[in-house]
Length: 284
Picture (cartoon, rainbow, N blue to C red):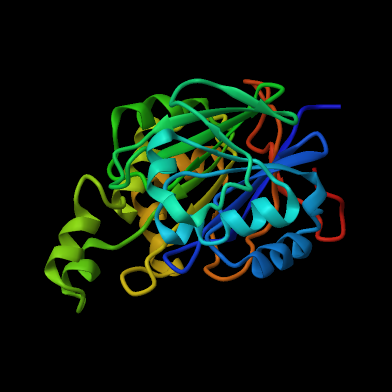
């Protein structure tokens, strides 16, 4: 049987973030920014048993990514993985009853069937990382809260078969909104979030034909919307999307996205190699 990675977002946006990535009957959570109750419910919605989760990978210490990490770690006995910079920031959110493993950027480690590589980002939280997961030659990236488009992203993207990619805001909407000016500067700056245009240009210029599934994530609630994000990508990355026909979806804010599966695709194969997982099926 071919190798396969399945993934979906469980919640996405400033109200809370969590993503599932699984292979070979086990999986991981990237962040736990919603309540433990909602996280459990959303896993049930996508037919992933909590027992199959091998650990929680923390990207950084902002509350919309770590809200329930301590509760989930203690209640379900799940180990936490984070950088030393993130560990220092979470402080009293952890009681000492959790199993915490410190990780380092660009040093791979294995959880279940996945080999996981943290990648440092310039996002404005100490020790912030994004993650690339690999199983049987298939690679999926969870690339959100990026700060800006940095050099390592350009190296990573051509190696991916699937990606959860930040597409946070529409610049004109951001600068016209009622948020305080320093907040706008922070979002648009090198430590904030990448825009629809930046994400689309990244896909256009650095994706390879092996990229079969794209989930646009962490959309701003007031400076973006799914239709606009999709349209910008269709405009800017049109040549790539039309030629290679990857799945392109937008992560819902308060509910799981569809479970997607990516498999190896021979270089000479026709477009394809990714598909939604039937809702009644079991998930790895």
